Image (tube, rainbow, N blue to C red; front, side, top):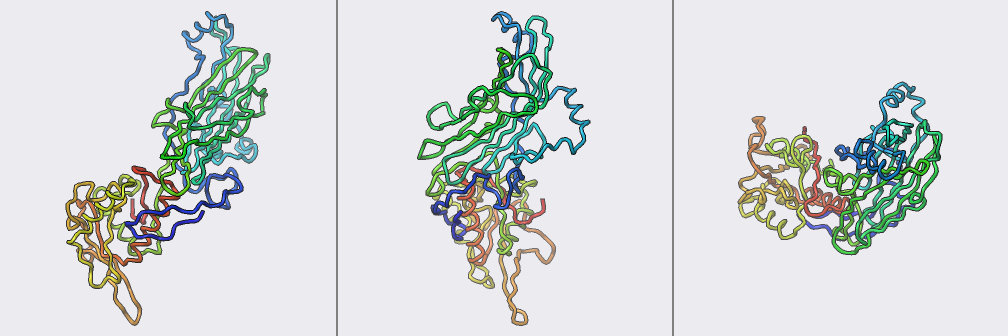
Length: 443
């Protein structure tokens, strides 16, 4: 990707050139990452909502099927039967690894969804029950698992998914089993789906898989659009059907399988997984600016942007609001320190965040914590030190302050601002999007 040149800490990002399309869509992680490798930074989503089965094996469900003339019910649910769990636990670890997987979450715990800013990956065990609708007796059980990985690109409106259902074991031998997938990314025409062979019934036997790729694309060209992807897996055993539904608006937390596409951030549209909260790592080369943010995060009682200690910052998308934030924090009360080279007014939380002091009630920058970078020359060598009142008495700045400002060398101010601008484009941060800030502060 062609990245933006560093900008001032208060500058808005410009549209970046569109990079060449990658030869293979591989979750936008490090170039040396192999298929199936876990990306360097990912997060675990909350447990999804219970799936919706079309033929629950409860009394009411069986009665409905019985009255419809069906003697057998195919019931599907997440999880594995207890005897299967015990059998799996007893297997040697070497036997559990049947070979490399194309899914990057393959070595993570089943039953959860893992996300990066450009991918979502999950593996979930599934049990299929063939049940007598009259007696309620279970005629047979089958066990398998679903693997799925959604991959987006930040410079393309297309996003793909690799889907797989693997049948691990089954004692249902009297009938042929087929599996079919239905999936939609939108109820209107704003998203197109192509399921390929997955959208038609595929025969499956123990030890085999039904696997394929789903291609999707945003059909819009303006603004932004959220897609809550939903799924139905349909199992046919000898003419008896059952299905399991998940995803879509039925999922907790705004949707587990959610993709957002927009054309608001750069010249070209792109898509991300918005449930992932990224982290801005302040480069160590901006030493004093990084330390300024770290001390401010550690000393302020709210610990803004500090993961594990406070709450994330949120992107301020309005240039007008950002300017107002800046004008209040860096108002006429700011006086550059005489020993700061090429001094500028630096602030934290950033003016481009909704946690800026002005937006939490600060009327003037004089209410903020105060820092300055002092430069002196010793034996012909220039040295810089981040200073604040009480430093030499081992005291931190006031914890109750809602903001921090500093007399900062302009180059460092611009450097951190440029990194924020670059990541705003790379992560496609929109107004209100959350992000953490890692400047090395203790959590």
